[in-house]
Length: 134
Image (cartoon, rainbow, N blue to C red; front, side):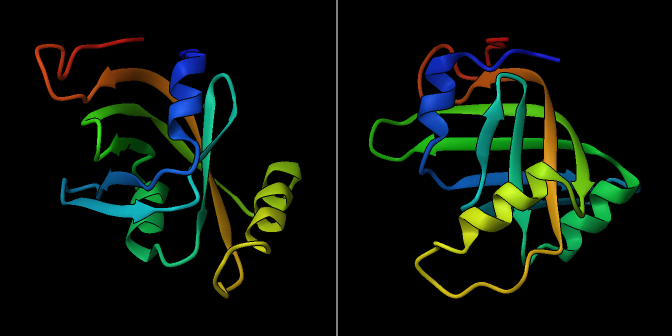
């Protein structure tokens, strides 16, 4: 596990994230997620609302990459790790409760994906792009 620096935890808040997974035969899937959040120094979560391919990929291959970028500053980060599908428990309940306050009506949450972060990379424009941070 890798500790998520406080600066990156703050950066992720209220931003759209892109979640990438791959099927067992290597077919990639990347999809936007508006519910990605940091739950502690080592984990991210997001709600699985419309994510059939993501869910199927994670069941067969738990490796996942999450990229968050600020379009105005061209600053960004990619966090890589392993995803776990949750169907109950405190983290699941917390995410479900938060989504009740979403600005649009959303379908019921079937899964919450908990990601254990293994590494973090700079995705900012410039000479450090791709550099491992943690």
